[in-house]
Image (cartoon, rainbow, N blue to C red; front, side, top):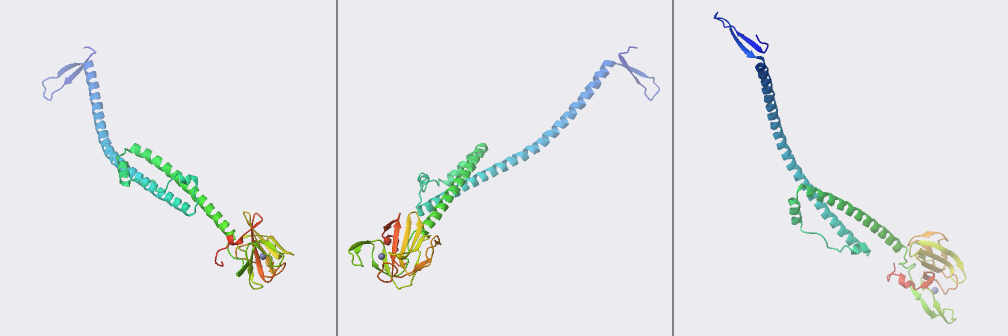
Length: 304
Ligand SMILES: [Zn+2]
C-alpha cells in the first residue's frame, strides 16, 4: 500500500464484509484546508455584517448630531449678529454723549452718526444660506470684530469720563458766583477818582453792602495772599489755576490764611473799609495771567 493513500474502512452492521476505500493523502489535506478557509470566510462575513450594522447606527447618530450642531452654529451666528447690533447701538450712544459734551474728536468724525443698521432679515437669510465652514469663519471674524469694538468703546468711555471730570473741575475752578450780595457802586474801567485826584483806572468791581457781611470764594482755589496792604487794606487773593485769580480788598476781617485750599462758597473774609476806602464795600477783582479783567465777565446776571 502506498504512503500517499488514506484507507477508509467501512464496517456495516450486518456481517456482509468490510469495505475499503482508498483516498489520496493530498486530497484529504486539500479538503481540510478548504474547510478551514470556508470557516474563516464565513466568520469574516459575519463579522463584517455586524460592523456594517453597527456603522449604520453610528452614521444615523452622527447625521442627527451634525444636524443639531449645524442648527447650534446658526443660532450662535445669529446671536453674534445680534450682539454686533447692540454694539453698534452702544457706539451711537457714545457718539450722542460726545455731542452733548461737545467733545468731538477727529476719530469720531470718521464715524458719521446713523451709519450701519442694514436690513436684518436679509442678513439672517444670508447667514442661513452659508455653509458651515463659511459660517465658522464668519463667526470667528465677527467675534474678533466685537472684541475690537468693545475695546474701542471702553477706551472711548474712559476718555469721556476723564473729559467730564476735567470739565467738572474747570467749572468748579471758574469764578461764576458773586462773592457777596450788594449794590455795584463802581464798575471796572476808567472813572473819576472817588478821592478827587482826577481820572483813574478802576481795576475791579465795587460792591457796597453792610459792614461785616460774609465774602465767599467764587470758585475752588488756593489762597496765595492773605495780608494787610496800605492801598487794599485786608486783602485776599485766590489762585484758581489756568491763569485765573480773584482778589478781595478792604475786608474788615480775613477768614483764611495763605496756603489754604478753598472751595466755591467757602467764607474767605468779611466786608469792611480797611485801606484806601470810602465806606463799607468789597473791591472785587479778577485776574487773567495777573492782568485785571472785568469781573462782570465772570458773574451770573443774578446773585448766585
Ligand atoms: Zn474798588
